[in-house]
Length: 124
Image (cartoon, rainbow, N blue to C red; front, side):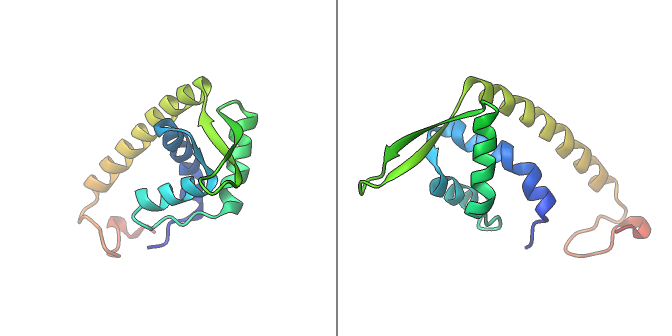
């Protein structure tokens, strides 16, 4: 299944903040966690993740520090800040509103559409 890039972009900040709320992490591990959480349906790249992490750091939502991997290589670790936790709570509330609105729209569709069937009213 292809997930539209606009949906991926909209979900990126709350996903990263949520992952970092689980504990400090680094870029490759974050990409792996997104892949795991999505059952392999969201394939993030470094080119998408690192600009987001840098923006979150500039905005004070995450902090970065240098550490060493198990094999001794230096890598940047990211941790959520207090402001990041507050932003995560706010984003969660926003997503709950969106998810509930979508649920209501989809439940009201007659006949219910799934698996490529056309939505009621012929809209696309």
